[in-house]
Image (tube, rainbow, N blue to C red; front, top):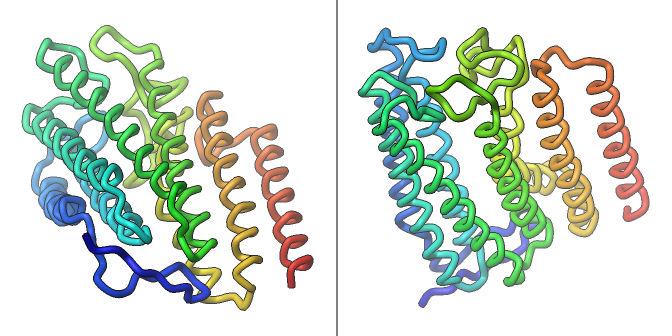
Length: 306
C-alpha cells in the first residue's frame, strides 16, 4: 500500500512522492468530460426544447458537475496522509451512482422527456425512483469520505479546514435537494425546483434559474460547490497573502461558517418565492448582516494574530 506524504507550503498542502489517486474517480472525470462535449454538440445540433431550455442542457450541466466533483474527490483522497479503504470504496460507489444518474438523464433526453420528478408513466416512475435511491447512496458515500478526513491529521491546517468544511457544506447542499421533492405539482410529477411559479418559465442564461419565482437549485448549487470554493479560497490566501498559517486557518473557519449561512439564506429566499436577483428588504438585511459579521470577525482575526 502506498501512502501519501504531504508538506506544508504555506498554501494548500501539496502531495509529494508516489501519490495514489482513486482511478475510478479519474475515469469518471474523463468520461463526464466527454459526455459534456457530446451534450454541448447536442445543444447546438438538436433544436428540441424541454421545460423552456435546450433538451441537452441538463446532460451538459450534470456532466460538467460530475467531472468537477469526481476530480475534486480524487484530489482530496490523494491528499490524505494514509490511504483509507472505506473512503476509497466510497469513491468507487460514487462512480457507480454517477453512471446511473448520467445514464438515466441521457436516456430520458433520448426519449424526449424529463428525468427529474417525472412519474408520468411506469417507466418514468422507475427511473426517477432509481435516481432518488442513487442520490441517497451518494450522500452516505460522501459522508464516509468526510469522516475519513476527520479521522486523519492533514498536516496543513488551512487545507484540512477547507476540505472538511467543503465536504460538510456540500452534504448540506445535497440534502437541500430533497426540498424540491416536497413541492406541490401536477399529477405527472412529484416535485419541482421552482417555488411560486411553474418549472420551465423565464430563467437566467445557462443556469436556467427562475427569474420570476424562487429556485431551490441555487442554494443546492452553491452548497455543492463549497467542495471546490473553499479549497480554492485556501489556496488563494496562501498564494496572495502574507498571513501566517494560524491566521489563514482561523479565517477559513470564519469564511466556511459564513458560506454555510449563505447557503441557508439562499434556501430561505427561494422558499419565499423570491428570484435570486430580486430579493426583498428582509433578505437584503439578512445578507448585509452576514457580510458585516463576517467582515468584522475576519478583520479582528487578522489584527489579533498578526
